[in-house]
Length: 263
Image (cartoon, rainbow, N blue to C red):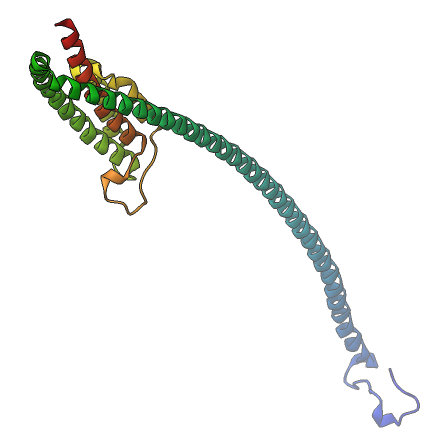
């Protein structure tokens, strides 16, 4: 470690007090642990780098697995949503077709009732003319007035029955058009009306039962959402109510005609 080109005082001199002048051995003794420490740091750095690379690979592996799992779940969700949309579109198409069917049936039934109403009005006009003729004849006129008074009482009772059915139908249609009133109340009203139509003599005489079934099946009309007037709900029911009134009036005159012919 001495530089021969340097002056003597600049070189490391052995300690004269040491035996044999071997002071340089301490310099080498310090070098050994330094080299050991450097080797340890080098080995530790390599092992740390290996651990870092290992953790990176594990992280990327987990990340890839998570991505694949998310993609799989996303595809499953998309497939399920498409299946749900297709099912809803099919159900919507069925409801649309069912609505069209109901509408066509309602239109057909309405036309039928209008035609029957026209025929009834013609027959009523004809009977009214016959009534005027009978009024002008003596004994026959008196008999006619007697029969008319009798059948007028029956007509009054029949109109009362029709009015009661009208009130029940108004309530039934109001429940049908309501978003909050329970459905079982409507079904109970329908059941009671059908039972009465099948047992009440007047209702049986004017054949109300079949008309009620048509109303319950086809009359789905409701007023606007803010409607509070029950009479703005329903369409077919009003045609049938008018039809029953005309039927009562027609039957009254037919009963009078039958009584006169029997005399």
